[in-house]
Length: 312
Image 1 (cartoon, one colour):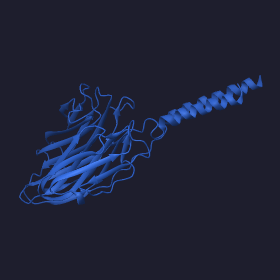
Image 2 (cartoon, one colour):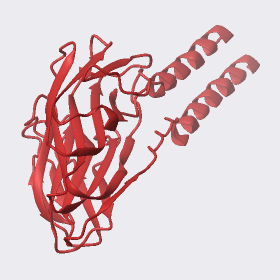
Image 3 (tube, helix red, strand yellow):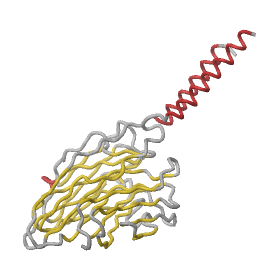
Image 4 (spheres, one colour):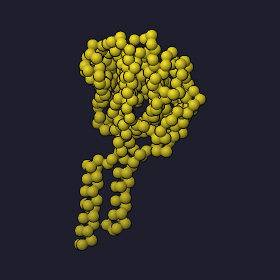
């Protein structure tokens, strides 16, 4: 075996490894489990809407009829398919251009990614128009989702939690379960739970649990549009820390993206308290130690074999 052959083998091994773990060239990581980005209590309500599935339309347009009341916090979500480094998303909301990161906020799996941003200053009462233009001809938005917290002094107080992320449940990475929590709950009160799932397929049965109680089966079934499911469930709080658990089940791929919990306050006193937290940075994809070890063993074996042949 001459030096040229050895070099070719080593280059091939390195190319295979880099292809598997380089951004856009393969698996882009397990993603970010859902965490709380905002929570609080307001006299008013929480508006949650979104749609309408992957269509590849340009621009991708969604309309939101926001209830009367003073908008005190609003967050926009745009999950996107087939992200590659360098892709850009242009966003327009009621003719304005909200600040959005140049790179996605949450990326996982084979380019399932998500943009999220604070759009409080751009939301109005009544009809709102959102347009998104994604520059990848082989990709596009799964949906556009809007969460609006609004105040109305004539309404009773409610507590709310907004959890976001992008966690890849898949056979590829052997992750079957994802959980997210809401702290400061009042046991015994009723609530509405909104969930946004990406990449679900009808008939591939997944399961959704709230505080260990099964509340949905085959939730990820593309019921709200192609590859998206935005659902709402009536739940009752049983613990001070409530938990939502997603079980992949038969699904090949399932991405929990957003959970919003809106609960009765348990009190008729006025409240006006909103806490907004920093976004969690996406962990850089890294090559597992086991993969590195195997590659080193192969390289060492090739070199030793070459030296033996040369010696003989």
